[in-house]
Length: 151
Ligand SMILES: [Zn+2]
Image (cartoon, rainbow, N blue to C red; front, side, top):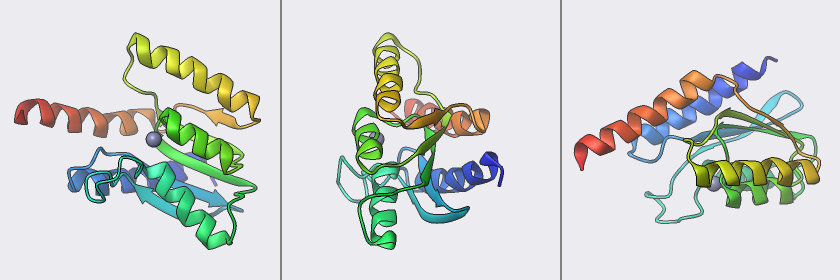
């Protein structure tokens, strides 16, 4: 199946987060062509700073597979994972990470981006950027624009 079809599913999760006032990021985990986990950010709802879409999806997938090693699994996420989630992705043995859009660019994020690229590479995780980039970036822009108007 085409990568963009799985990213569409991650985007649907991002929209669920958007509609709850959560940072609109979604993730799905795919094994053998099948989506085995899907999640969106729930940091506000769960009052949990670690409740990022990727972490929640990894927990679901581990439960489903009955173990923490997500061998031959691919993770699709609408925005570049943070350092915490990058660590969780590596620890869970996910093979491929497919990313919609990068973090909003500034010098701090640029340094972190470079670090993450090396971190993934050193741990044999393949990373693909820019799948449905415009759509994934659009929802984030809308969310942050609305916040600026509100506050
Ligand atoms: Zn994260």
